[in-house]
Length: 400
Ligand SMILES: Cc1cc2nc3c(=O)[nH]c(=O)nc-3n(C[C@H](O)[C@H](O)[C@H](O)COP(=O)(O)OP(=O)(O)OC[C@H]3O[C@@H](n4cnc5c(N)ncnc54)[C@H](O)[C@@H]3O)c2cc1C
Image 1 (cartoon, rainbow, N blue to C red):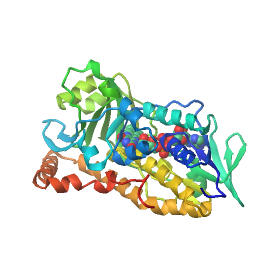
Image 2 (cartoon, rainbow, N blue to C red):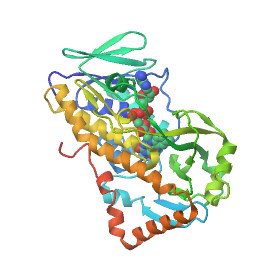
Image 3 (cartoon, rainbow, N blue to C red):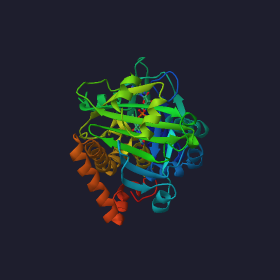
Image 4 (cartoon, rainbow, N blue to C red):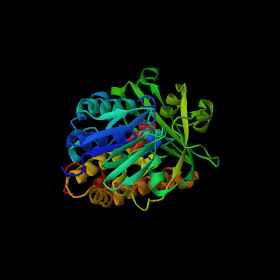
């Protein structure tokens, strides 16, 4: 471990902050996490963890718990929302692990958060709730974090893992202006026991149609179905994960769609609605002994299911850079150099998927689905290798 860097402060006890805390603690650092929320309770629905993320969790010896509480889908599929025509199918259960060495698991956010938090508690990470971070000052030999209460806490390094509206990012780079993408998304869960057996396939299913798409997958060993439904809209929505949505409006947006979609929507009792926002690459992620991590530095649209996986990769690389010696600012600069291009590439890929899933009119949609079908059926090895750069990456083990 670097001699001068011992005490690390982390703003935010979300998925990225807790994962970073664990990676650092395992390498011998003292870690204190400051969380704004009065209680640690994750809201929301499902998270898909592909091999690049599950590899980091395996390195932290958490993968067995994640598998036990999660669900491994048969395949990823893209299907026409009305006819059900399958234009793309990529086997996942077993196949993803054979190709990349680690599985593809779908898990409830609360379960994943609970696993990370339990491991942090066992490892001796300090976690303080009801502690909103407001900003920081750089010191001659470290950093002082400022809480909204006025209290200051000193450390050798501060990591801003405080999510899309990061206060640490604002203190580092000023307030940002995210762009509304013209898309809103509903999300929620439905107990699988309320669905007719067999009507919802055991896939990570993406159903596409003009100006909208619908994603579903199972959680908790198949007992819960998670959905995300995206529609294009002119109206602007607040960027929040916890704004209540209107179930009637959601059903109307997907009226006439395939049975699998209809069966899920019929059982929805409540849903959240949020606006999707695009952001440019940040000019930098670090300021001396302060670094950003996860959504604080690379918030992304959910269309690659990679936001949390990227935060896990950040956590593993950041901890390894700090443990590698040298001064903290140099180690954090190295972390930024190793991560920024890759995270930006995934952000751009998620934006490209939004365009792929939402073709405006039916004729263009049929052409697009046909092209995807032809690509995957005529050149299967190429199609299979298309995301090797993403899922094959080993943030915990590759040479830095
Ligand atoms: C609907 C949806 C589906 C998604 N699906 C997937 C998926 O399938 N796979 C995937 O990999 N990713 C997915 N993501 C993305 C993923 O959830 C995020 O990228 C991930 O949670 C980012 O982790 P984080 O720790 O950076 O931020 P967060 O998880 O948002 O955590 C930030 C934490 O900081 C706290 N905080 C905020 N401000 C302050 C402050 N001032 N002081 C102290 N604490 C503060 C917050 O309370 C929170 O606890 C999805 C996201 C959404 C919205």
